[in-house]
Length: 262
Image (cartoon, rainbow, N blue to C red; front, side, top):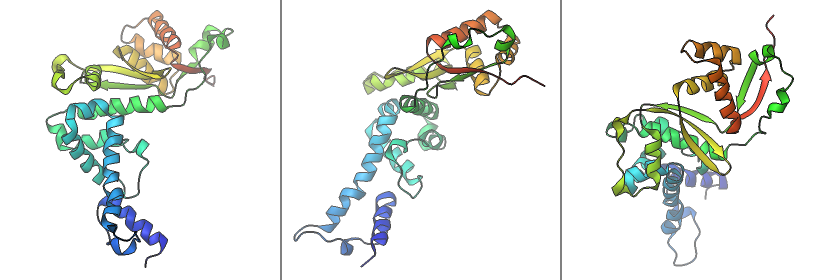
């Protein structure tokens, strides 16, 4: 008979990879029971749970594909996962990357970016919320101080640039499959994903706002961001309006001052 560790590893191999040493002789079951049937509860249950986990994290993608194609994708994706079992809450994390080389993308080229959006929605929903920025904390700042200001956004905020109409594709999660009709020729968009209460919002933004968010997340100061946007004929008061909109939407967790240059 195997040790407990050997049995655990053998069962794990059967569940994750679908092969391994025969287990029936190692399993004690009641008289008349079928060891293979008992083992199948686990070996067949794991693939089903992976598929359901993907369906939960990627509802629009799952609806567009349908049950059969989703199950096939789940099988291929599961085969590319590490040998060690993965937490089902995080098992879909690598699906956007996997889809870039999967055969489904040959006909549905938007799938990787749609998956990226849906995973960002999942991450945003589960992200820890920081305390909100309170402008009163900066009431004594001078103009020079504000030039050195750096903005930190809430952890759940995500920004995506896509050549596809992501919001329309994301909306298909609530549609009957027979009624899905998205005009993929309408062009791409920049979207921000953030949590508002218990809801995750997917909102389109202009390129200049996307540029500003990316710059601040790269640790740029307000002066540096304003200078970059000015090259695109964006005025300082437009930058102020962006900042006010972020504060109003509770997207900013803090604003702090960079160390003065030597």
